[in-house]
Image 1 (cartoon, rainbow, N blue to C red):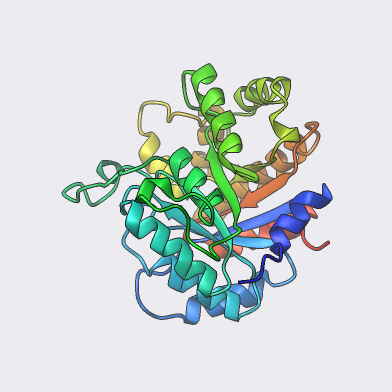
Image 2 (tube, helix red, strand yellow; image 1 turned 135 degrees about the vertical axis):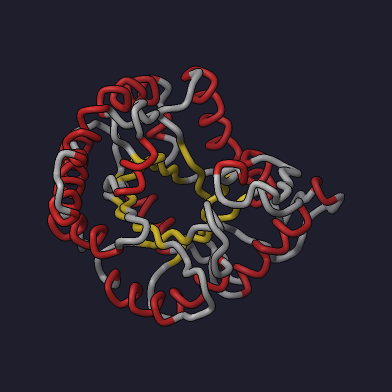
Length: 303
C-alpha cells in the first residue's frame, strides 16, 4: 500500500489553519443524504469526521466514510472502543485503508447508559490510548493481538478527543499528553461553550507545550433544543447558564436557532485569538444547514 500522506496530514504538517466538519451517518440505509452533504461541504472544509454510533444506531461509519470519499470529500473515520474488541478494531483499520481511508479518530465512545441503548453491553477491551498505540505501530508491532506486525498496514493519520470540561484537570491533561505520545497527530475538543474555563484549560495545555506536538482544534456546536431540554432547572455541565438563557428566552424556534448560531460565531472569534489554536471542527447534529451557515459567516471556509 502507498505510504503517501493524507491531505489532512499534509495540512497539519504545513502549520496552516485547519477546518473540519462532522457528519453523523443516517439512521437508515439511504446514502442520498450523505451525497447531498458531501456536495454542500465540498471546497469548504479540509476533511469531514464521520461519527461512529455516538448516541444512536446509524449506518456504519466506515460505509458512510467510503460514500463521502467517493463524492470527493476527505473523511476522518471515528473508531470507538466501546463496541469492538481489539480484533475488530484492527480489522476496521485494515478495511478503512483498503478503501483509501487513512484518517482515523480514536475514541472510547459515549457510554451506552447515557443514550437510548442502556441494555446493550459495552466492550472496552482496550482504551483510546492503547488503540492509538496499536494503529501507530500496526505494521511493525501488533503486540495486543500477539502479532509481530501486519505487513503493509498504515501509516495512518491519527486523531483523538480532548475534554476541556473534564475533571480532574491535571489527570485529563496527563492523559491528553499520553494520546499524543501514542501517535495522535490532531486533537478535537468536545464542543466549547464555557470560554473562561476553556481559556484556563488552554493556558495549561500551552504551558505543557502540547500545541507544538499535535494540532489542537476546538469543537464548535450550536446549542439546540435538545440542549435546552437537558438543562432543566439545574445547570448543564460545560454550558454556562447565561448561554442557556440567551437561547431559551427566544420563543420562536427560528430565533433560538439564530441565537445559537451567533453564540457559535462569537466563540470562534474569541478562540481564534488564542496562540497555538490550529482550527475548528464544526458540527450541528440534525441541522447541517446551521453548520454550513457557521462556516460561511465565520469566514473559515476555503483555503
